Image (tube, rainbow, N blue to C red):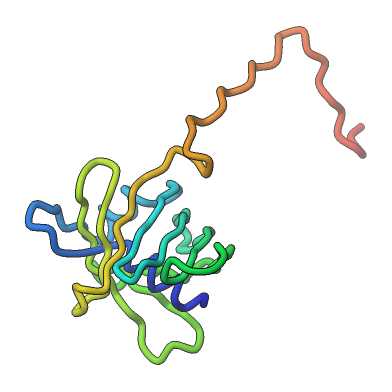
Length: 154
């Protein structure tokens, strides 16, 4: 299941609409890192996920559109840059799949497994998990606020 999710997430970087803008690894990093994306894949799989700059991924997935949503966490170094490509490095896989990534518009992209353009996922940026705007930032502390002492401080 984790390998499938990684492939889905990595596939998150790809493929063939005529007007799509191909993204190299650096463009993909700037477009994707730290942002939340919903995804829908060719096989019916769907979910949400956030890819971090260290190559880790946290999200949820429903495989082939059936059954429960499952939480997934992939450790740092799962998504790696190989030259200009983004690839998935997963324990137990016999090969390291790389992905074609194409920006569709300012909020979405398609990712497909290199050499398998039919195996793709479309990703759309979300504002947060619930799909609503983020909460406003809390008010900064007033200038007359008393600082909290650290334990063990003299």
